[in-house]
Amino acid sequence: MKVTRRQFLKLAGGTAASFAVVDLGFDMQATAAAIKELRIKNVTPTPTVCPYCASGCGLVVYSEKNAEGKFVRLLSVVGDPDNPINEGCACSKGSAMFNLREIYEPETGHQVVNPKRVQKPLYRAPGSEKWEEKEWDWILDEIAQRIKQTRDASFIHKEKIADGTEIIVNRTEKIASIGGSGLDNEECYLLTKMMRSLGVVFLETQARI
Ligand code: SF4
Image 1: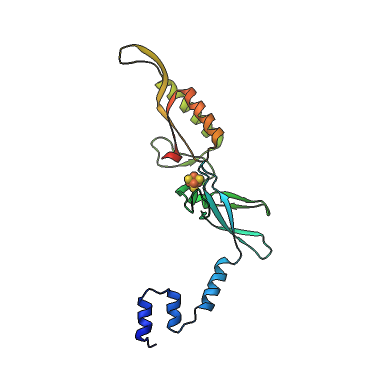
Image 2 (image 1 turned 60 degrees about the horizontal axis):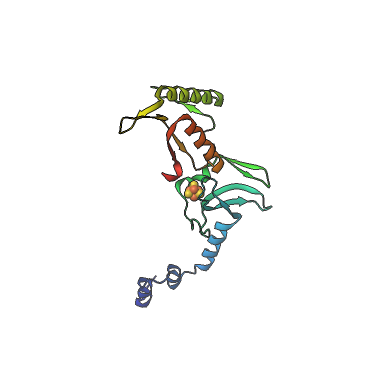
């Protein structure tokens, strides 16, 4: 195809690519319409709120529905550009919401299950290179026993301050607690109370890291 000097200058001048291609003799309108139809066909965007932390970022869940409007599958989850809180952004955790093991679709009762999601507690014994699947009861008893042993063995009842006076401190420095963004206010309150009652002073949350 022969490109005239005028056509070349138009292309190099930064005009929109689609107009430029039309200038070269292609009619892109039919192609663009077909692509547009394919990309949005049967896809439903549903605005929602990220379940993880109190920032409350807005997300859009894109799902595919069949001709009868029934849920077929989850396609993607992205930050909601219309939400004034996050303006389309989402942190790594919110962006990974797509990988939640189960997302319930109330109209159809359909549950989306991620087959890669770990569904049982995994335990690696000291010195071992292998992870073993364990039951929740075993894991919870083990955690409780180890917390008790560690706390009792490391508990500091009194401490001397600068002038040599002994004061009661009742703390352990061998246990730390890190909360997750999935915890709500009440859960954070209870977790903090429990940790303080054990004497734990190192409390942090994943949302601040
Ligand atoms: S976890 Fe991330 S995306 Fe979700 S609300 Fe918090 S900051 Fe926003």
